[in-house]
Image 1 (tube, helix red, strand yellow):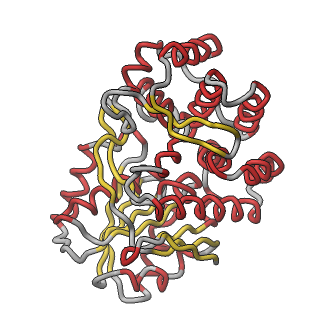
Image 2 (cartoon, one colour):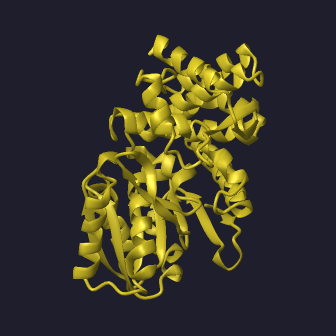
Image 3 (cartoon, one colour):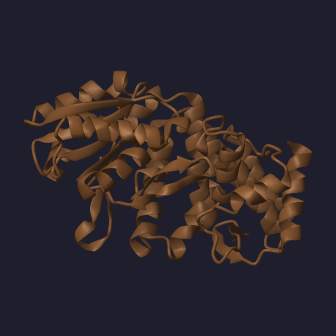
Length: 362
């Protein structure tokens, strides 16, 4: 097991990474305020990992309430959130009853938002079971649900007490989900770690083959980057916005084609390629660099071409992106591989050229 720390003063918390951690209740129990917790999971993860987690906690005298939700990004909405509130209230969960998210990014985001708002805030613990959640969404305290007009537009910053990333859960992860997680891994190399990007080029086949050492290394490096960025800018007023590389386009893709049609990581992957193309049009990247980025994305089994929603629809959807300031779109773009920045006042004709290119190749 390796342990990293998200440094947020009194609200600092550990990220434990390793195989078999679900059976180690002692990693969670010290972070509980009472010997009772509510585990929120979904119908896919529950048959695999709910009982082992409950058993580990029961060994330390903790009783658990089970809240099993339907699976899917399309369920990350008010209706499902109310199901969680109903279950917490009917089980008489108190302000000191911890909420434990057991699952991928959808469960983590939704359970975290429930924890942030139930009785104005209860203890929250992340137990991510997908690659995307382990390297990105479980760390940093972003919680929320989707709205028909925009992804993750309703939510809160609410940090967990601990993140328990059991890498053994990736053994049951479908190939498509594993590939989707690689989009967020690639992102870290692109925005702040050229050496890691080169490592990914050399080891992407090992990651796809689920080599334990390669996966453990990729998860550790990704979490280290996420922890450093969150510690420097918890509420995304500065450097944390760089973690949204590909997300302005990606969130538009998810909302435009319908939540759940593409996985989040798939939409982000296509968004990264669009962001690289826009970076080229602004004179930051050369053509070979864009091709290099697209090549790695493609080798990871991810889409390099965005769906054709039409330029007007893309602009409409991107207009409700959380990075919009004073009505102006802002994009995370690449000055070079390994260095990103948030750019305002990007000329609309260049955005339209990038979107037109996507339409031609969709």
